[in-house]
Image 1 (spheres, helix red, strand yellow):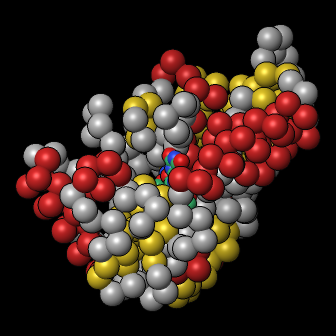
Image 2: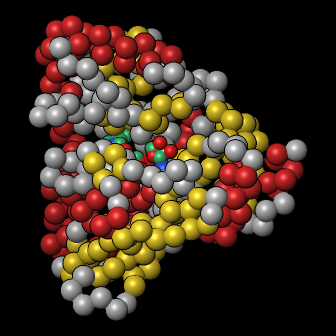
Amino acid sequence: MLSKDLERIKDLQVRKNVPLLPLTSFRIGGPAHLFLVPRTLKALEHTIFYLGNRSISYKVLGQGSNLLISDKGVKLVMSLAALNRIHSTPGHTFKTIVSVEAGCRLKSLISWSIHNSLCGLENLSGIPASVGGAISMNAGTNKCSMAEAIDAVQFTGPDGSCWFQRNQLQFDYRSFRLPDKALISAARIQLDKSSPDQIKRNVRNVMRKRRTTQPIGKPNAGCVFRNPPGDSAGKLIDQCGLKGLRIGDAEVSKKHANFIVNRGKASAVQVMDLLEIIRERVKKEADVGLVPEVSIWGMET
Ligand SMILES: Cc1cc2nc3c(=O)[nH]c(=O)nc-3n(C[C@H](O)[C@H](O)[C@H](O)COP(=O)(O)OP(=O)(O)OC[C@H]3O[C@@H](n4cnc5c(N)ncnc54)[C@H](O)[C@@H]3O)c2cc1C
């Protein structure tokens, strides 16, 4: 009944029992019973209006780089992957404002800005994310975060879409306050003019550092815990001697203690058990309560 109704929405692709595992960087998780891919903003608005009116909840999928999904899967997933257009907006004097849909990959946006001699996003290079996911997690490094590049964000909820200016938005460390029942459908990013060679050099430096500090090559979901104020989750986990600790195929990375890597067939349950052990040990030995950074779907924390 639900899928029949949704199939009537123009420009909405409705798929059943879609495996989510290949859509996540962790390579973990069961299927989405229904998987929705709106191809236009109108289709997204109609879908959210339909779901909102019936109080049907759903999960929003970006690039799947910060997700731990239950082995049983989840009911309803909205993928914004088809909403990925970029265009620059004329009329601003000092900055170039670029409008981008939320499903666009951050990597594509950075390549587009290099091509158009625009800088400002280089320090975010190598963060696997959609623009919507990067905003919702306020993705970043110790040098910068997504918030700094934002001019405005468009939200779409059951009442339609509307733009919020930078001063109306609340960004925090690895978090962003979303209006109730809304998702991020687009953003305006402010960038400066620069030479493509200089931007490319900056990108290369950032990528080089990333390769030396992060476990590239094994499936993972980035940092699993948020850094406690003034401290580093990775350092605390390392000090407890937990690097290399394994449950099944889930392992605390030997390179970066705040990463859990999937050595092959790790399950969500194994990762959850590992998270619990880490939390208990850090609490006991350092008296610090670690909070997950990774978004967990379909399981209690
Ligand atoms: C190898 C690796 C390195 C990483 N390095 C970093 C790093 O240096 N810094 C950093 O901050 N992160 C890092 N991450 C984590 C990840 O890249 C970021 O959290 C990123 O912002 C996730 O974006 P995504 O599109 O993949 O979101 P997803 O993983 O798909 O979703 C994450 C959360 O955002 C929500 N979401 C996604 N899109 C939207 C939307 N349009 N509207 C509302 N909510 C939405 C989802 O519902 C979910 O709750 C890393 C991950 C990996 C695998």
